[in-house]
Length: 117
Length: 493
Image (tube, rainbow over all chains, first blue to last red; front, side):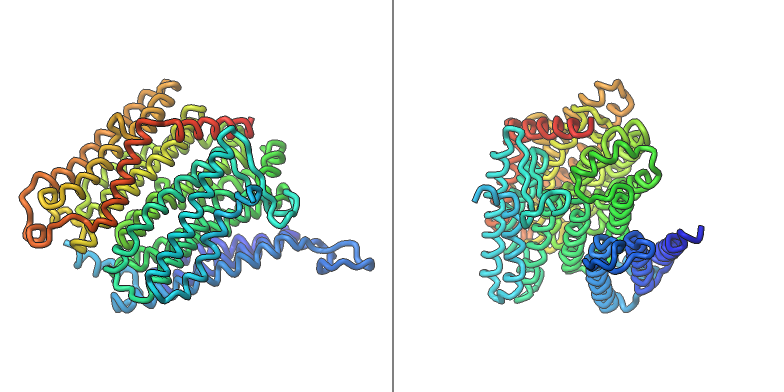
């Protein structure tokens, strides 16, 4: 159980993030939920690459056991993608606020209903 | 030179994109995008010819050998998908300038072309890559540029639609990332060909099964498979018309391709059909998707809404083809990827032309347009015929093969659903044609009624003509699909 502690945290964070993304009506909170969800996946990949008692993956004769660098490199890419997604989402929220005067989804839907015949 | 072909088509738009973002002159930005698109088309045609004998081209990026480096694999299946993406983009690029002038973008038009080029490049990237993680990266690049393309719609609802798409799309892509992570944990490799050799020994492994589940959900969002289709109608409806045409014809089709490639080329047909029985889930979702999409299309006032919901139904046909799983069913799915791309490109291209004239695509305001714009509405009619599946059009070919494959299994109920949904397609397209041709013109139409601008009308007719061409001469589509399916089933067995 304890040896898999990281993964328990990953799944707790993952579900929390998904719940916040789905359940909140405030658009910024949705983005926050999405970020928590993505972060949980980052931790998942980083935990995956860790080798017990391993060092950083540097070639040196003194060390024989080191962590797997590949998942860490992969997740660097995913972090960049996550930052870009967040930036775009926030930019969209700014535009939505200019158009609707609100970032509450229920209020936006109400305005859409009134607008369309 | 010819050994570099597989990667070249990706490099043209990818290098053009950053240059394009600095070209303040609108014509220059267009010219650069167009040249990059056409260059990719030329490469795709060369690749199609090179793979026409069933050969598979493997290109190792940076000279690193396959399981360690990233490889680019071209076989009959992705050669056909590449032909579709680059061909449709090459025709639609003519219609971009006129469509963008009414978006009031000014010098920012260059950024729109940049987003388009990035989307185009990443769709090619998804299609050619032989590396599972690479699929995720390109998927996210294409998604991010798609959100930007959708959000540029003039209506404020475009931004809301883009935001909803962003939330669903990111959750879906992250699910694919989880799936790739789990696969790497279980097998220690990311190369698709390598994965395919290792997974058959791990059928009882819960990690692999979880990876498959996460992948299906993630890819399902991108395909807009029922019930994960909620982003699609809004995104297609409020996006600038020309972006709708490009996305409807290419983005979801590439997602179906990814699904096919992973199910048959990575996880293996045995795991899908015999161990996890996912084909029954797919069958159920496809049938519900076909019915719900067709019924919803019947009640839309916006023509773009009609087409968007019809896309949900048509994508479910492809899911159905995967669920059938036989060579005939998969051939139908692959051919429908191509043919449906042509159909939706033609229909949305006509709508883009109509939108330039009227700044709206609502049925209630466009009554009687046919009297003033017979050529525009005529192109729409041909697209509609192909969508319904009238013999002689491309839409007929794929529906016919789908029907045959279902009857092969003696699934009479499913065959009935296909026929009923074709009748529904006739109903919702006839409703549009009826309003456009036979009703008395509204005031808006009598005041401003005119054909779509010529450089939008011609691409629409080229695409409409392609629907006839590929409905009569099926050597390109059926030939490539047959070879593709043979290799897909060969890999998995």
